[in-house]
Length: 490
Image 1: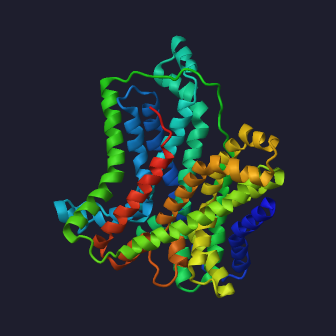
Image 2: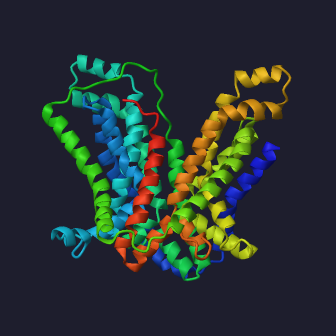
Image 3: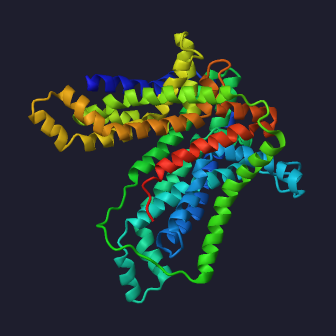
């Protein structure tokens, strides 16, 4: 039974890709004249984001992991904090705040350069994705045995050379994983390029959809999926370097280097955090809640709860089947496809499904299906790991005492795995709350969430009205970051 249910879940996950392939084959090729420009913009944004994230994240990871900074746990949390701000919220703040006549100009009289186009999008994406590189690099550094560095120092190698020649080659895979995650995020993001008015695949797909060019939107979605597949293939080729645990390495920083490191961390994280938070605070003080309605919170919460429950229900048979053999593990891997499908692409495919089915079009059920496909891996990963841990000696003892497989699962395994399952549901809930493109395309008429209300405010140019939803989205995202970092130790 779990295998059958898991196969149905896997089929639902790959359905959007098949729909896009079917629809894209008949697309009007007249659009191809712009395709080169769109590809270039998309690839440049991904490359600049990955490169900028490496330039910022790697040095900070070395300093925090190995340096004798005071309160290293505080610096880790501070440098990871930009993950708590959805990139489109940051883009909204930078777009509204910078430039002549922007909010910063109005408040201080300081006319800063406009933040738009490729430079603006790359800046915003870097500020909100460098934590990927920082965290993966820091994790790789903390897993290394510091004895090799100390041996190199004893043999006369200067510290800088020892770090470059001994440590860096051993953590390059961690750096690569973080950079690829940043690039994948840049490829998939819709809000930032749209707000910065940069024609990438995600923005043009949305434009084509609104112009009723579903076939062209599908073809562009396939092009974008091809780029995403390249990134995922590269990420799969990068393996982790495992070493036997040893003594952690510590380096004593000079007073100048320590001060410069802390100042750099404050500038980077402060720019990413204080610009949006400061603007939202000024808007709240000046305009209050404006036309904001609690219905947006209710809608977001309701849809997120439905998606979290549905994702857990779908994840359970997948996780159980994965423990029963190779075919089950294959089905589990298939369910991870949805996580690599950008929200705008998934939304486009499911719009077609809704149109063909009729009864699903612009329904809450179709929107929840999109959420489940998109964020199912969060539930599957947590459920699988907790079921594996819970299905050990205690479950074996229950079977020896005469309990059947179903009874053992219901009375022993499931209660032990419940905390991990709930953690996966919480992550799905939080990610759904901040999802923008799929919600824009699939929400029922009149059904606005926090994210879509913020988008409408941006389109109308009434930036001050976006303070309340932006603050709430940041708060929701902050909870997700806390859950992600809950196991961190100094």
